[in-house]
Figure (cartoon, chains in turn orange, cyan, brown, blue):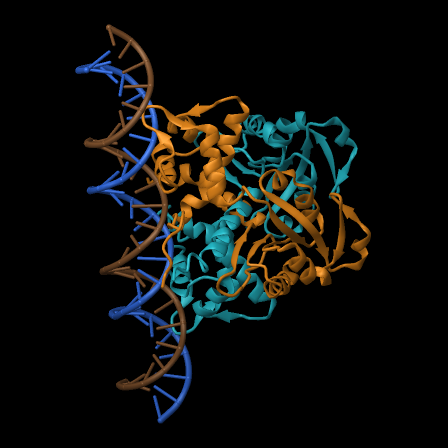
Length: 224
Length: 224
DNA sequence: CTCGTTTTGTTCTCCCGTTCACAAACTCCT
DNA sequence: AGGAGTTTGTGAACGGGAGAACAAAACGAG
């Protein structure tokens, strides 16, 4: 008995999902500028994408625009926020309070976009005295109780690479089903758990590849 | 003269380029464990990808394996590093020494993977006293001379969103052709300049979307 | 030397995502 | 009211990447 799609259980392509937050930010920016209505062309420019792609992306959510007019900024902003799920607040735990963990804990963009850091955990007892971003750094041993008490489903891993897998295992066991991994390692998790990774040095290496080709390309084509 | 060089199998797909650093890391990890030879199956498992995809990716670089045997870990590691361009050291400047800039400056993964932070810049004069990761925080006004003196082609932006575009403009004008942007904003740059963005809250929002659907999907309307 | 085993490199097919192009729908002006 | 001008939403073509399947090459045993 597969249930009937109640409201919006239609499948939105993954590529579109990844762009929705960009549109959301662009709309917020437009709203801050006092814009109340915008065309797909304007919004696309603001989000840095092609307007046809933008319209197709939005069409997966429904018909929230008006032909001949455009989109109501505030209305569309709310619809996208609802689709993503950031109209509610998501509790988040951060594990690993080194340099990066500090930065993440202090990042104001989380709070303003629907996420609330409920706990900072670190395995090193020496850090348990610290107060970072108004929160005590607590023992990693408290993970299970914190997850249970706050209904946490999203965890952030900012530990060294060697610790990442065991932290992920504990998170999954504690009931977390979405992990954002900053450690430079491949995590293996059971089905049903989502992992997204952010790897700083990989991004730089991709840039280096293109950079290298820029400097080589002009000279090599000269076939005499 | 140039036709014979085996170093450049041109036209490597972008998706493959993005995975090469992952393979590089997996190979380094295998080498650290004392492994000298590995099959595509082993390496693929270590990198978290399908083995057919791995072999196809490597085939764009050349034939560096031995049929019936596998790949020599050290040899393949070097070949990938050379293809990416991280056998040489890339000088990098970081602009914006807030929480995130601190974390980036102290990130050891850059140095160990072919990148050298040559300068830390910030617009705020109050920060110019600080020493971060062994480097003085210098004035943003020094950008042009630093880029010129060190032949910098890669810049990292870790400023607030409002400052990011003007920093990018100055970087481009100074001769930087690759930018890694951590500021939550869309940068516009001229052709020939590569930009990659890392957006922490976007990643969390993508997770939130899937998380929201998890909680809705299984129990949706079990209509009797 | 020959045969069987292993594993790579490559070809082929399918699928997803991007882009184009246009009909439908709405507003505004006369 | 009607026609001209806009702008959305979408069907269809197109290109690129993922995965399966297989042929080619190396090695070892007998």
